[in-house]
Length: 218
Image (cartoon, rainbow, N blue to C red; front, side):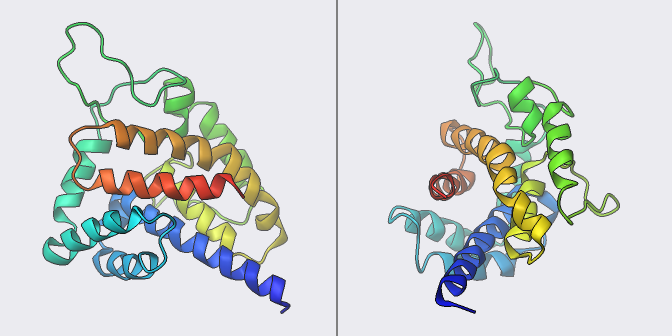
């Protein structure tokens, strides 16, 4: 392996670690069983943060998980991402309140079609399935409850593609990133940063924003 190839592999491994780290926070089933994994990932990632400000966000999450596990984070996940939810406008991750609306912080949905069309199982899902068919990655419907357009699924897909040596996977990587992950990720990160009642996912949102800035430059 040449120096350039070795460098590219190191970058791919680092990116894959970040994608796996975020998947653990955006998939409820993973979060529930990943206490030790997340702590180990934080230890690695905070040693070389993408932004100096990210260190405090890593430490906030590390302190919470070290002291209390993921129970409080799972409760915030439920309040933040599960029903009921409000549908935002096409170009806004957080919908403006109508006059007299009481609920100031509607739940955030993690599906691409929700943000592009204001619905679920729309063209975003079709686009995701089309691109996934170009790869060797497949959804195990028996163990995975979310659809292919769910942000958590797309994060795991990116991790797989980055670590794969198959040409089909390598060819699909950039398109999956540009067409699926970056648009949805930007919506999710912005929504998390705008939401006022978050203790843990505010840190996740800031870390996600820093990571997406790097991904956009690739």
